[in-house]
Every structure is written in C-alpha cells, then in structure tokens.
Length: 428
Image (tube, rainbow, N blue to C red; front, side, top):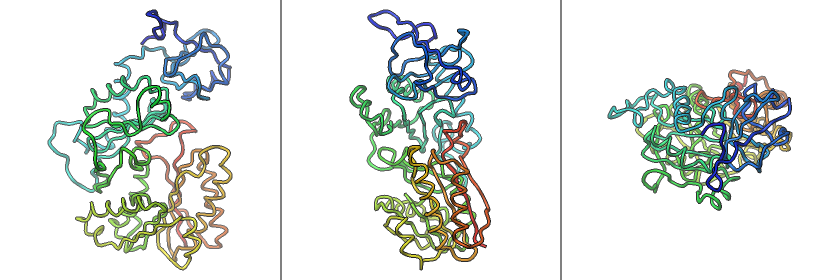
C-alpha cells in the first residue's frame, strides 16, 4: 500500500489520510518517538478509519512519518516509519519481521525447533526456547508483541489499530516462521471491540491445533509451563530471565523467599543454584500450583528436586508485616505493576518503599534483597531512591551489588518503554 491512495470506498480509492502537526510534534517524530497524540494534530484532510495508514507531512509539505491511525485513542497515530517515504506492503512487513528476528539471532542460537531443519536442539543449561521475537515500538511494531514458546508463537495486541490488519499480519508470521501454532492474545482494553467488530477473542488459536494444557518450554535449560491461552502477559514473564539467572548465581547455601512468586521462576533458578530452601509467597493458589508443577517438571535436576520447597498463600504485603520472625538469606520482591496510570505514581513509590523495608526486616546478616518494579510510570531513579530510603529507614548498612533493566530481547528505545528495573542490596 503506497502513500498516495487510502482505503477503497464505493469501489473507488479514497485519498490517503494526511496529517499536519504542531512544531513540537514534528521535532518529536524526527527524534524517533513512535507516538503522535491527537492534541498535536492541527490539520487533517478527512476523518480517518481504525487501522488505516496515516501520513504526516511537515510545514514544507515533506514526508515526516507514516503510521497506523486510531480515531478514538489519545495516541492518534502509531508510527511505523519516519524520515523516508515507503510502501507498506507484504514485503515490507516481512522485512521488518526479519529485522526483529535478526536482532535476536545470536541471543537464542540454540533454538532450532522451529527455524531450522535440524532434528533436535542440544539440551544444556543454556538451552532457551522461550523468548520475545518482537517487542512493540522498540522493534518498529507499535503496540504488538510476538513471543515464542517452543513451536508455539503468541501474538499479543495492545492497541486496536492492528485488528483490521490481523489476517495480513498473522499471514506474514505464519508464512515466514512456519509455527506449529499461533495464538492471539488481546489487551483488556481492546477485547470488546475485537469481539464486536472483528469477531476475535483473547486466547483464540489462529493457526494450528487446539490446546488442552499449557505449553512446555525451556529457559536456560529449565522447563516451565506457559499458559498461552489465559495466563498473564503471553503466558510467562519472559522479561525477568536475566534477573532469574543472576538470582541463581547468588543462591548457594541460602534460604530464599520469593515474594509475589507467580509460577516459581525465581525459586527454581535459586534451587538449581544450590539454595538450601525456597519459599514461594503469593496470594494466588493457581500460581502456587503452577510453581509446584514447574518444580516437578525439573525433578531430574538433583539440586531442584532436593531443595525443600514451601508454598505460602497470602498477601505478600500483609505476610511480611505479620511474620517478622521468619528470616531468610535472599529475598526477591517482584510485585505486579503498582502504578498503571500517572495518578498512581506517588502512591506506588510509597508502596515500593514500604515493601522494601518490610523485606529488609526478614534478612539475616549478609542477606540479599532483590527489589523489582514493572511500573512504567515510575522511573528507574525514582524506584531506586524509594528502595534506598527504605534501607536508610531500616538503620542497617546495605551495599548495592547490582542494578538490572531490560533483557536484550525486550529492548526499550524510548522513555515510555522503560518499565522494568531491579536493584540488589546486600546487608553488611
């Protein structure tokens, strides 16, 4: 689809949707930012349709950017390309997908099950068959992610602009990658329009056989379940892989508490690293049961099968307050997002500080606290300062031993994309 003609109406092409914007927005788009807000548009040649291409021109009538238009969203245009005009067609989508995969080629070179003719991949402590193939705006796919779990791919949409193009994009993914299964996941905010207007639903299998149980994949040689049909995100928290690996390296001989444990990822890595015990703390019985199953999946590893594994079903904030007699040598606190909108930011910072302080009270001498945040509206420095304030309030001496951000398959190329941060403190 070129830049001259827009959609077809009554058998005739409609003029391409043309936009002009304020000077500040021109500057922002030239800098590479992937969003254009409706309030920045000063001229529009016609009403735009959901998911159609909109082209932004500067004050001198030069091409500035092209993206996917949403007439009802504050983010009016999701930028696909800026700086140079191009034709958005099947070959363009395929080329962009290849670029995303090429960025990860050396990260997961061991995974050959889908993309190679070799009969099997070697099993080792490094084998990883669960990872992100496309990471939204930072890969040039605004509001879209594509995750791989063995031979199942999960396509998650966070914006409705992709819904009119779903068949086209799913076709490109299927033809180019040949997955055994392609699953559609939808953000809650677009599920109603997806069902009503396009006949799509969250958990829909677009390609391949139906599923009656979770998909099993490997991460660093550890096996995990992924509930790709109904689970959080696309079925697993792939973005914490590097933190899990670091926790493993710190766990030998330690009693470990995994707060907000979900399906036990940190716990299993800690057990493999030689922890003398691990405890999963989560309010969800479903999550704790998944953790139990993940431990069973890895019972052939002597460290994992031999590590005492405790399940604690409780609200982590409350449990930490009421059970200060319980002491640990390594505590991971990885809560869900505490600030889902800007208005919640200050409350989230207070909650992060309270949570970190509660965790510190459970640490033995030389114990390590791992504090994590996935709140987009809380910056790295704000979060780190909240944890440092907790350390000061604890009246104990802590050493910062590490800070972590996004893993390489989850790049964050603009400010709003930087959600994940972790800090490691060791009690002196």
